[in-house]
Image 1 (spheres, chains in turn red, purple):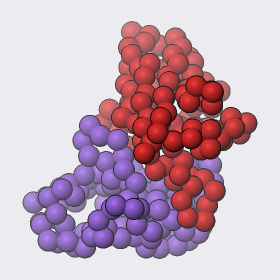
Image 2 (cartoon, one colour; image 1 turned 120 degrees about the horizontal axis):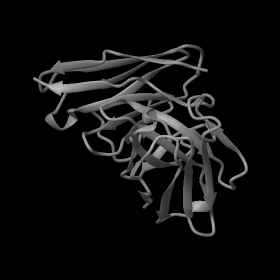
Image 3 (cartoon, chains in turn green, blue; image 1 turned 90 degrees about the vertical axis):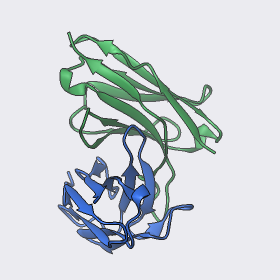
Length: 123
Length: 107
């Protein structure tokens, strides 16, 4: 059973950087694409980024392109999200999720989720 | 980019009622549409994948249908534990997008 634990969220000033981590266990991490999804306080879900199982292919939401960067270390079963030039609108709970590739599509179904880590951007 | 329009934003219904939520894509996404449930303070949970397929372990009260641009999610007989926010999500291509969510409350 997949177990995902995010960490690294904290209060940070606008313009600063932060790196979030997601520790994976209970499955073969290197076999699965992984996602980050965020949720601003009281708002809906916003898909942020996805990375292929081998870390080669990455895709981002338009709203974060150029500022957020997804990466992974398959030797340590860990997913990362680097957040640069943080803005107040980046304040959110950040979830990592495993792509379970359900049905006929190769990717896009988020079947297992962590509990999230809160990033607050404020001076 | 594909945009997702989900409705209604919220609804209130009685236990035992049949409840339907709709999701419309701005372009054809075939059947690449998932539904998730999120309860307050919790992570989302996958309920339905590829429009109509029930995730393992999910109650058969939940069902989904649709293809192309128009999709629906139905709770056949609303139960107290179904109080939550429900989201659709398209995965026909990146960037993946979620609908705005529908908050379901019990009268």
